[in-house]
Length: 100
Image 1 (tube, rainbow, N blue to C red):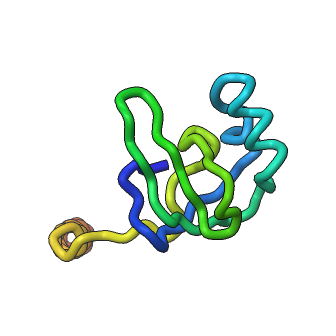
Image 2 (cartoon, rainbow, N blue to C red):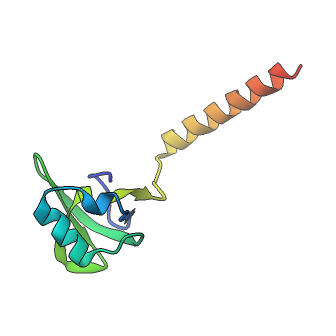
């Protein structure tokens, strides 16, 4: 998952992600998290070698970022959206020119 996730961002737990981390991290995740479920970020605290994740659905527990997969519905900046539109435009233009 993106360790710089913002409040309200969505993450999910997968069969693979719940097995990540040291044994204590895995046990804690398996005890509290559900595989396949989406969770809502409250906030993260990024340290040098670990990131604590606080989620809305389970407010009294702290999780390790390795227990989650990438964000669901990643939020893009306006610049990223403009760049993607340009790339799509040039790709479609290239495809049209190939057909001439």
